[in-house]
Length: 295
Image (cartoon, rainbow, N blue to C red):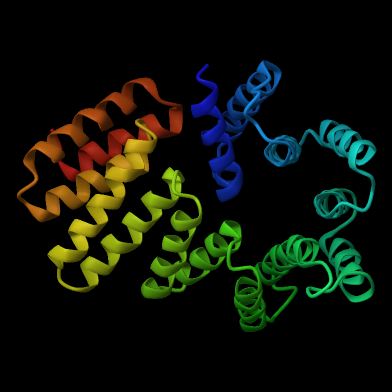
């Protein structure tokens, strides 16, 4: 295992919350890989980064419905850091969501904000707790239990303005704009992510995706297509078998019409992914090859 590449990969997955979109088998595979990495003892992994990956282990267990393991990790971190840690507040709220419900967790966090934490006195803790509050509110809104979507977006924008160097907030805001079809705003947000995290291959692929759709809106604007291609190429430069990156290399190269060597390389890489990757990527790669008529 290349510890440097593994470190960057796991930290990217954590910062972008990519694990939230994985299938059960992929979650288990990621969990096993992360456990192996943590046991190897990467001396270049800082203490904040170590805590971040421990946090991801907690959430992987949550997503795999391994509630007991999640509780064990929470207890271990609580004993290590004390109860008054912002990350532990959020983990505790997550356990409340599992064992009780979203509203109980929301009231718990809002009480912390209202009674103990203000942005001016403790911006880091305030930001961590507010991100979780907004996440719960989005889920409640989707379930029809909270009809305040515009207020949620305003709260998110306000939080980004207060914490402009938080890539997770920019990502969350970008996804919100993207789902709403506001491509200019989404593109700006994802560009902020890669400015803050220049090795974030998922972020570069997202910039490529949004820019590609902007190009379609502008009748296959060549400048935008070329910009999309450059971001997609940067994504796969950072992660050689990242399917989404290669898919946008292929689609933009094909749309440009004069990038035959690039398109050929993308086709070969997608065919390789169809052979060696996980089950979901194998299926997706096959569909991309078929739909784009790459071979």
